[in-house]
Image 1 (cartoon, rainbow, N blue to C red):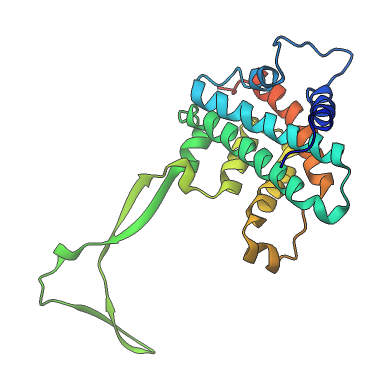
Image 2: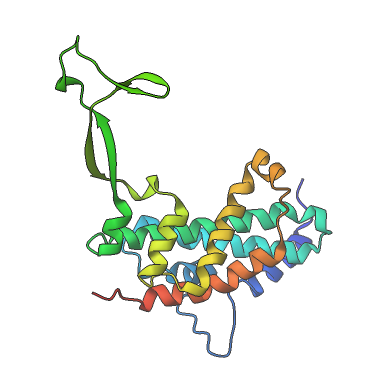
Length: 228
């Protein structure tokens, strides 16, 4: 059963009042808070992705304001904080992947997605023919292989490598790389076994820093252009 209307109204008013960060130079081009958060992603041409990014940013900020309004003790804050960490890490990942996906012509991105692998060539010898090598461990069968070259999808590549490439080309400021990587590792502690092994506890300092850094990061991305 929900709280009385007057109490709910008071909480919602408190949340909405500080939802959009205000500075002396803040300009609000949208009449709604959600519109302001979505406008941070004007550089995203995919309307569906832009909507999801703005909504994720909005929800993270909204929940932080609810947490502040309730003034709960530390143990009750973990779910609020971890949700924000998940949202901010996911926003960073989506923005980085979106931009990298548009920059496949750059040498650094070409190196990132390219790979070499060895594959067995079964037709090279007859079905009854085998090749062995005599060594200290006796005869060992040799398998004939051919080197193959190909390209991976971005999502198949470890995030830290994608992040490193983004930092190398200037998409991610070098000063932010370590923080973003740590935030992503904290996001993965959503898995309880992983969190237990690392004795992980979500920290409000991490989610607060993510919010502050996100504002600067999105401004940087909006004005950034790769050096050809």
